Length: 117
Image (cartoon, rainbow, N blue to C red; front, side, top):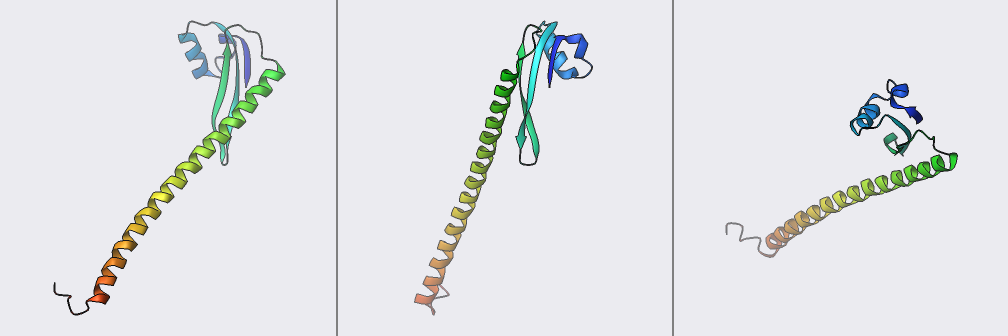
C-alpha cells in the first residue's frame, strides 16, 4: 500500500492510519506499507511515513519489502524457538517423572517384602 498527498484524499480508505497521522499534527504525507508474511498468511505490516507528500521510489519499496521478509523470518524463528523451549520443558518434566518412577520400582524390586514401610 502506498499513498501520498493530503491525508483527506485517502483517509476514507485507511481511516486508522489517517487518524494517527492527524493526531501527530500532519496534513500531508507519503505512507508506504508492506505485509509481513507468515506461513498461514500475513501476520502484520511494516510501514514508513514521510512528512511530505513525495511518493516513495521503487527501490525504497523493494527495500521495505526485504525488511518485511526479514521480519517474517525473525518472527517465525522466535515462534519456533519458543515451541522448542516448551517441548524441552515438557521433556524435562517427563524425564523427572520417569526418574522418580524408576526409583520407586527399584526400591520395590530390592525390597519386595518391605511394602508396608
